[in-house]
Image (cartoon, rainbow, N blue to C red):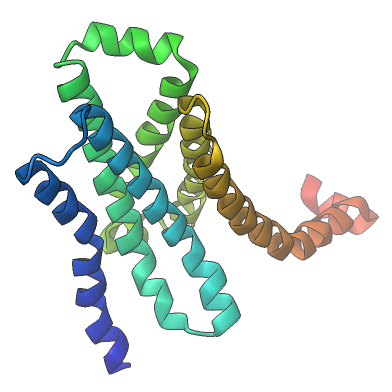
Length: 211
């Protein structure tokens, strides 16, 4: 439909608003008393927001019947990757000044950094294979690969939860949304899963699986 096509550039521009806000805060010297921490938390928050938004597309599409929503999932996922790159760049450049030895030590010794780095690394192949050409080339393997986005979401929430020391309300809120989105998918998968288990437990199904 034409309005869905017209909404796409509007959505793209809206996804850039957090970046514009960050740049404006930097221009006006309004990055709090600890600018590096502010940028790190800001980009990390928006990474999780866009990641959860991309995961919400499928449930919303299935519940509402608005199949055109699926065209926005890739955009939202790529913006999640864009903000996580900014998040990691802040950590690598501003926080550690390209001290890769210190970064490796940090990843190995600090659990919340380990969780966050794991999520970041897993997002790289997802972003690389998000083109239409890669989707066609990978076929069914593309869907299997992109299920790692669930692991990314869990790692991101754990990273945030372990990072905060006192006020855990926001990571818990993100975790609740993620649990709801993953729970919806689990409920949708259960009939097919039970069907496969029933088939494999029957004599005919077991014989077919062994062939």
